[in-house]
Length: 401
Image (cartoon, rainbow, N blue to C red; front, side, top):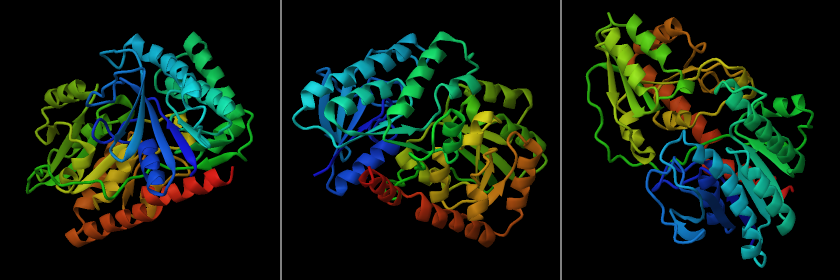
């Protein structure tokens, strides 16, 4: 029986957090007879339900995976300095697994960022336990902190993270990423792309339930469900709501939470927007019932040089599964999922007028045309992004090492 360790500082399972790609890969490979472990830090700010941690290394079976949590520092805010310190604590704790598992080592180690610091511990495990190392890049660190976080390249922490990043690429037997153009980034940084494979995010079509009461309305509802963050570029959508105020039948509904929530609500108040409604966060496993009550779904991101290497928003796959038309306003060269699937409209990032025009265009379609548009998206996602199919690709990659 082959053994695979999935290392992801911020991973979780659906009952205590959000799942995520490493959870689904670990779960699917376990179903196929692999001995898999999902190794995470505990606590971390993305856990919605606390996990018990009676020892520094605690193992438990949870949500169809074998979960190994490594004790970290307690912190109350995602902006706490302890969050940064935990990157190094987690990497240190990983090194301690050599002694614990020396008689039952893994064949493969799949280490997923962020944070990039954990790759140091994964590299150590790979050397000491003679395991093939896969470095999985979901966010390009530290470039993301520079482009979206406004950090200077000369900042001491950025320089430290850069060293971790370069060493990870040097030591990896295989580099994967959910970013389709990541090979371009590798080449720009002096690495060959011969060890790179694209492994996109996806979804598990069997995980959704319908236990949430749908938002009922006779209006044409433009929906967004996810984090209210700066990177999600929600203000162009609010600006589109301003432009469409005369269309009394169109309503905008935002479902979720995040740092930008108060600023968004202030914007609505100052512009006297009566066509915008905010709804509380809904767990991922229950989101489909809410999405089913929308007429068109939206996903966007602000303009950034970062996205020339690709994007892979998790919510996109929830949207596809809902069989609804999608308005996609992300500048992502080489990745055009809505155009490729003919499931909606793609417009430039930040273009409020273009978003408004796309909304009206989809509203003016017949119900049957909108349903067919949504069906094309769902069929496209099931073919290319369902986790059972993506795990076929991952299994092929591992066997090639």
